[in-house]
Length: 116
Length: 106
Image 1 (cartoon, chains in turn cyan, orange):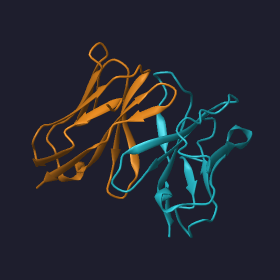
Image 2: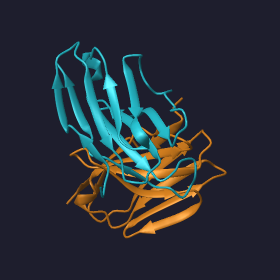
Image 3: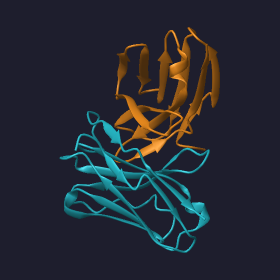
Image 4: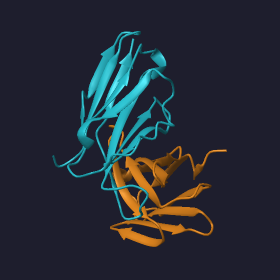
């Protein structure tokens, strides 16, 4: 597609349930990033995929969070046993490459997750 | 200490004023990004720069690699410039500043 697509745009879930958030990057973009922004807070890095390399999971806040990227394209961020502090906007971005100054990033419009 | 520091945290200006937002970083980078986040939450990438200066319309971004400092300038500011401006230092991932909330009053 023309941009980075995220779904759902909004998700309300009960505490303790699992949720899956989807990101469809721009075709051909090898780098994919997940971030989150809690209410009133700045952006927080979660995980980064680059091509076929092992993902950089250093930003995941707990082992309840996991992400995968199938076929080097679509990515799914899974949060197990959701807690209220998981409520945030989850943003995905993709880039043609990584670690190089010439690549720009395109952000999706985000998934607003509310855990009640 | 945060790896990316922005100042000011909040900025209110009158329409037409010249705006400067500053960003200092302590990490090694391949590029420095300036992002704009509107009240609806959408994020737009304004600039990506690794040296010197870039200009787009009324926006100018500069970076000094030696001093690890970047500035975003807005000339002839307008109420539609009101947004949160975020500085992000990138290598393989992105490290974000806390953002500067700009309000431009008519």
